[in-house]
Image (cartoon, rainbow, N blue to C red; front, side, top):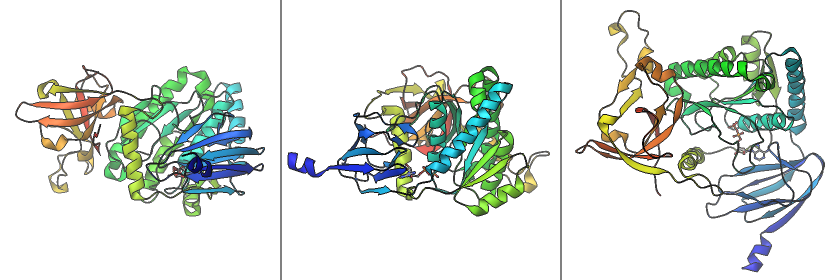
Length: 424
Ligand code: ADP
């Protein structure tokens, strides 16, 4: 009723350099944001005055203003406050330094800066990546976004690593447009599960991007922004060093953790600049269940789209004999039994052809682009994903949920650890 709605409308007047932070938790709530006057942005994307932006459960938002503004919020938020202290000036200085390097790169017709954002979980790595990309594209750049966070990444679905050419700012409520992403299947939400495979994929991704940049001058000068996952100890740290090497990183932005900063200063070559950045006080820690929910949501959106743009996936049966379904990683062999020349970790990158089994139910399968030999399947990027919604052992059929109708672009599929319960 009208009375209730009225009490749910709040107006906020922000001074220059302040931000309004709010969170939506409840699944039944929707919160609407609009800009009444002045200028404001959400993680680097400008808000259009008078337009209504919708946020649902899980949204954790900061609306920042460089010049002051008036904002209106409708609906029930769980947390809402105006913050006077933000690290936005520092982030904007980072952007200015990158722009300087891009200008130089443009003049010399060489590669612009490759920046890698690192730090523990929940320090705002994805947010900083998004801000830097948005600022770059607003200046007319076409940077490449690489997301190596296979758990909470912003490209494609969880269980992958990938890259996206950024041609316009992220949509405020839906993130970056997922047009023609370059996606590699990893199959796990955390890198720990298969570090050998992860290293192979990052090298493939880096080489593929290098080739793309050779033929795209504008993207070449714009450079790359790499987002990473929060696993920064032991093997996770080694992966960061490996990323630095394979992507030829020029600048590492370390969020929040001085120890990591010092380790990197010690371990990377001198020509790589390592910069420490404070995390924003607004970054919200996510619980394990919130992370799981966010992963689920991404997969649901892959098949069914979002509130604003629905998608209508297809469901069809396939004969087992029409498909080749693989899993990456064979059971470990004791060191003493390893064939000559095989390293203990090699089994982790072995392809195993699966026979029909109920264990596939609800699993995501990546549809490979690979056309030939088994060796290439692991190293080839993927066309997209399907989900197994039924396995009929007797009739040797499986039912797939797919964004596209039959036939699939390829009959080579790779099983992911990630599952999705199709409740539609
Ligand atoms: P990380 O990539 O390090 O795990 P994220 O960038 O994903 O961290 O940030 C964690 C959460 O905090 C996200 O939901 C993001 O929207 C939110 N967030 C980031 N910065 C702010 C801020 N200044 N105010 C409010 N929420 C924020």
